[in-house]
Image (cartoon, rainbow, N blue to C red):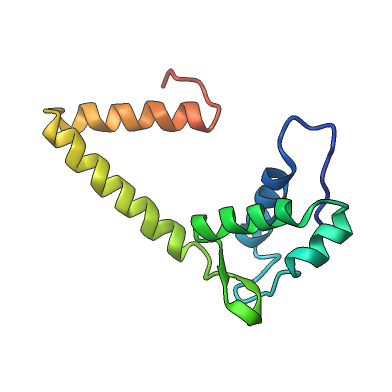
Length: 126
């Protein structure tokens, strides 16, 4: 597992770690069940504070990308399962909110499409 942190980057170190581990998990380079290094070990390897790595792991766990199993460490979660469940729950909540606001399905979908384009750095125009 190759993780590096660019100290000159405007992206905080914990986010660089989180993004790299998530990328490795999505690509399959880190398979489901793969045990990540202990927080202190990875922190020492990267020359960072343990709290920085711990925050990255907490963010990954909140995203459903990893699972913490106490003494058994932190492992890569089943690919996409938790992320897809959370996305579906968010979509259901949005759909219900849009309905309460009186939006048509087309208007609600247009709002989501625009938000996704902005979030992914694409043009707002179709």
